[in-house]
Amino acid sequence: MEKRRCDWALGHSLMQAYHDKEWGVPIHDDRKLFELLILEGMQAGLSWLTILKKRDTFRQAFDGFDPGKIARYRQARVERLMKDKGIIRNRLKIESTISNARSCLSVQKELGGFSDYLWGLLEGHTTDTIYRRMRDIPAQTPAAVSMSKALKKRGFRFVGPTICYAFMQATGMVNDHLPTCFRYKEVRRTRGRRK
Image (cartoon, rainbow, N blue to C red; front, side, top):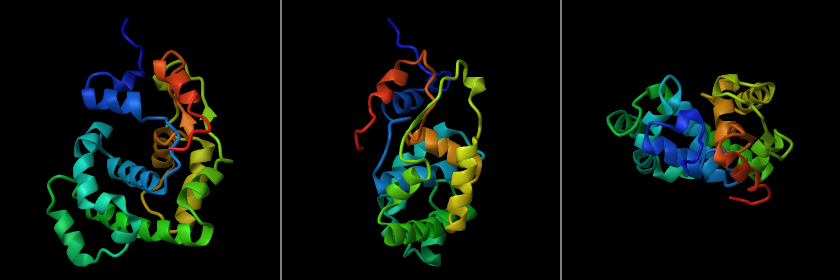
């Protein structure tokens, strides 16, 4: 019997694999959270499939999304990245990745961890939703608006409420799998497991 999935995951093997293995699973690793925050910002105005197709190249181009290395990038590195056809060549997005790396390091230094900070904005736990149709899922929520404001105060860029909500969905801060999707219950069972 065919497994039922969220509609957005149908139609491409990369989207299906991402849906089936990653989307909505709670993440507590600083570097993985930083990577997804950057990739969600890179997606602005584009499709997530475009990002998935380029994800490995992004990881190579941005030193595995190591904030410590990215924070040291200078203008010459920006110019090299602008010539890399394997990534999104948008100067504002590339420059925001560098400034976001510096902001991430600042959060880590001040508060001990990026994960603790982000999850602390949401009282440390995943919110399960029960939307019956994909079109009922909002583009942003009050929690996403609040996260966006908090991140912007700390100097982060490309972190509007819609980007923050997509980030929350991707990192398991909210479980927006439809209850009819086979992943809904699986993701709920990941509670308490640190990934």
